[in-house]
Image 1 (tube, each protein chain N blue to C red):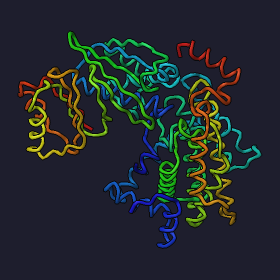
Image 2 (tube, rainbow over the protein chains, first blue to last red):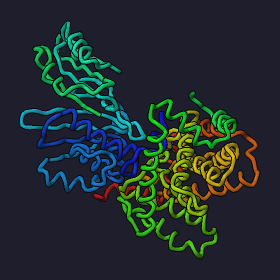
Image 3 (cartoon, rainbow over the protein chains, first blue to last red):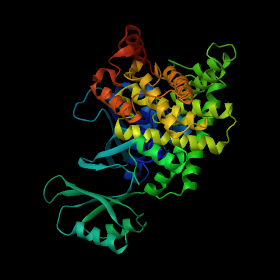
Image 4 (cartoon, helix red, strand yellow):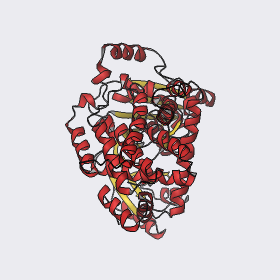
Length: 218
Length: 291
């Protein structure tokens, strides 16, 4: 914790968890999807669902998926801006779902046949956690540079990525691997201290066992 | 050099004959790798945002997103010359509510330490700085003092309403502002510690009971009380009044009280004034309305 966690963050009100955190979740979902999209389905759970309107949670998430940061004064105009952009947005509300954190949102982004579903929660003070990407359990905050790899669950892939990072002199801060079932698709989250090079995506995707690389740079 | 208690920080400042903010900046610089200049620059930026929010909120009625509140800071500012509380308290209190109004309208604020309590520190610092003719540099130093007091509270108790009630948010902000007001008045680090303890004791036990779960009622008015109380606590400490219980023990007690509070009274909108008949009616109306 530093002094700027106490006097800060700079944010659009009224709530660090329900507004600033919500905008961050939207922004992370946009980064993770990694390309243009024409439709977003947003599900708000529990407290996000019940008190979200008065806190501008819905607007903040839309602002985030449009690329705004939590201190952007245009957050309150997010609905008008998204309408202009031509992106279709739908909201669903789940008032009481005890299986998820009180402040949870599921954001599903679509482009033609492609879609990706990203679920995260807001922990307070503007900090968030991404918990699920397309059914894969994850745990990352977006506070580090993050590499997300969707890959085959087979020997050697983790070592391949790790040695690539070692060559580029990039230090791994945290790492998490999850899979749906043995030999199926796996998801690897790597948080790094240094900024990975832009060529990382194409370099790693050259490996036939790696289906997709997403980079979220802070 | 990580210091975790107010006692350690106060002793370090008094040994060197410097302000709490000086110790705080050295500590932060070592921990984060940022230079003292960078820390000051970032804090000055936060101070600028606080000033903008104040002037935005005292010069006009800004309705909240829900429409439940708006214009409290503006109205008290209009009435400040004929008020009973006196110029300094009224200015600080209206400025505190003005920032809270901006927050409730989806305007830009600095969480201090939270969005719910974001008015208290700007209200007090701007008003005391103006009253004593302090430079921006000195006010930014005082802001750094608020931050380190808040850090100690966060580490040894909590600054989240959902964990400790309003005493953890507006109470912490009031204690942080009281210490900084002493520093601006030329008091000693130990007097700053007493002021923080006195302010925090004044709101010990205060619950978090937001109507309809929104950061508006009673949050906006509680920001004004937090500011007024911080100034009174600073005055007490500057007059030589001491907190019988040391500040670190008061902080710990606040955390313990917070943990003992039932969930209904910690930001869930299920207790306190949030559970009143009128609050429930408002909640129904607000949730039905497409705001």
